[in-house]
Amino acid sequence: ELGLSCGVVHILPVRDEQDFSAKAVQNSDGSFPELSYGTTVFCGASVRQRERLVSRVLKICILVEGGPGAAHEAEEFAWNEHTVIPVKVTRSEER
Image: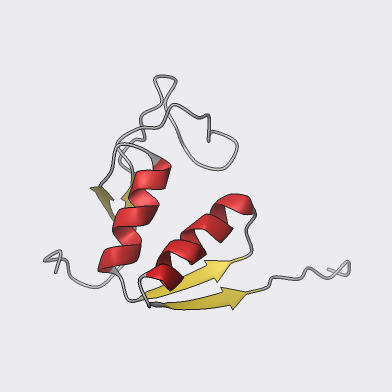
């Protein structure tokens, strides 16, 4: 229990040596900033460590698209016998 009311919760690592700035807001020193909306909770010393920790605490992972990193996170949830709900996103060419 994080002691948080309902709403958006961002669970981020403190930092990561790998550059994730194309996918997420990341400072030049590798740290991740607190986001301006919702509640930001920091856990883990890297993205991989955050994935391992979150997969042990949360019971459900809703995975929206994703590549190899998302596959690792889903695998961590599965190893902990937790539920993974994959969501495929398609975009229409018409607007």
